[in-house]
Image 1 (cartoon, helix red, strand yellow):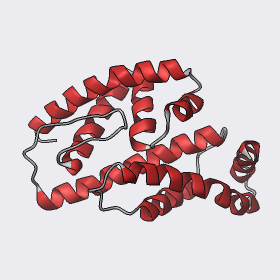
Image 2: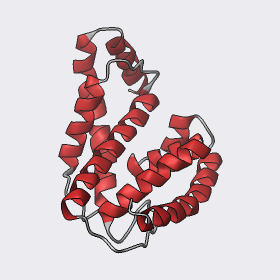
Image 3: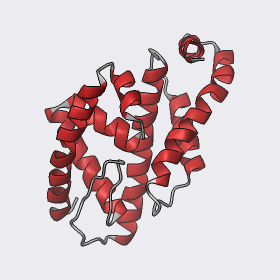
Length: 189
């Protein structure tokens, strides 16, 4: 099935519209699984899992200049799309209420965070953008695990690095991001 997905992605990128129809049922459930895992850890999230999957899928299908390398590449791009959707939703809610005096940002091992979730999401997104300038791989690890909901093994597969490298990057990025996110929240991010 993994090679089926890769083959269909390449056929679709080459202009075979029938490949997209055959690809959809193969990737849709995996996208739902990733979104469910993410949403289960964020009970205060107002965006529904199905809406997140549909919006990400629509954006993925509309992407014109992408040359899909393989299944892992597809899901890595899907994780980026989900991040953008969730951050956009958090920005909209934060703009509507302009609140949140909580400065605590907590990463747990299950990739959760606490306190004011919209403000945390925005602060973490800004911190992650800063991390990407300093260490792009660590930023991708966080993006795939935190926003994409991928496991350590899935992240290693997508980035083509070892499981130990993923864990090392994750352990080093978490405190840096937490510190930067708190700093960003203090400065009105």
